[in-house]
Length: 414
Image (cartoon, rainbow, N blue to C red; front, top):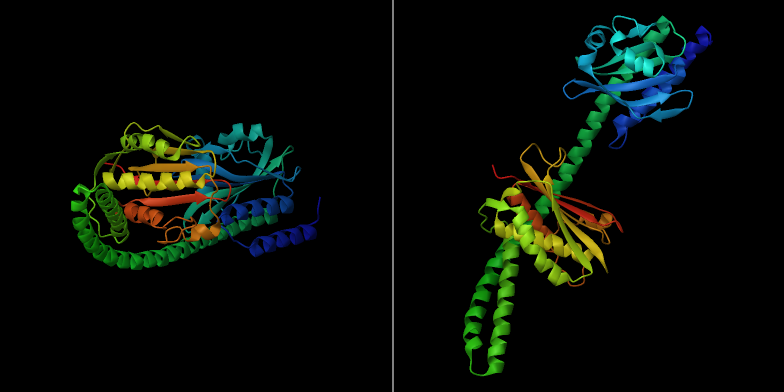
């Protein structure tokens, strides 16, 4: 057993290690919890240290991580239902530290005897993690095997560990907010560029339409000319002018000046109607597969724009596949991080093609940026502008040689 002086040194070393722990990255909270569990287990020489957090409106207590001293390893956390141990929860809200020699019999902890027996836990030194006035979790120091009475210095150390974890929690929340703000600023700058190009596109599209109107008026009579060669030339001119008109409509969408009448659109019907055309266009080398587990796939959208979105995304996916591959289309409910609440569906298009580099992803929504020899760079920018008009979101996940996943989040018809 270590002497008082050596214990004091161990505790101060542990506190210093926790204070110096640097938070960085999106998983900084989890890393901080793991570091605290390891440092505490070594300082107190207890077999298990778990960092638990309340979740689901405090209905459950979930273990973020548990460190086992003898094996020097981290394990997967458990989930316990708080209504099963009200006395223990009340004690966490009433006490600075809960030090119990006989955990399976003590009035504050015996409700957890099943958990203790499963892990051969005899004694506990538990300190609530308090942020502001709210208990958000608890750091549990668990003595395995023989019972143990904890000394005051050890109790004080457990309380300081909980305080450090509260600071780590606050810092990680602040860091996450800073990361989110930086991302919003980058998005704002990207949107500003898109708006500027959109205004230019709108002006160009109006002038272009005027010129095309005159070409079409001049070309249409030629299609009925008695001379076959003149009629053929008139047909080519008319078809070329119609193609230009379609491109102009793309520019109008990009400039957010095209009318859009939202109505009920059945995604299943739109996709199933489009699949035969896609299969005929891209041949046998590319398989198109559609699936959905949703009975009602109705969204609030513009039917022509949904068709345009599907064509653009499926064309991009097919062209990303160099020889043979699969394009999967799926309609499903939006998950928690994809939408701001219920009432959203996701149209997801996945391919197993070449994927995209970080450089390409940084310019995804910039009009006229393209990596294709014959591409215009208007397609995805048009999709983005259209989805924003519909009140939705575009989410893209892609890595080189691992394919691309595009998720269009749209509001359902209510």
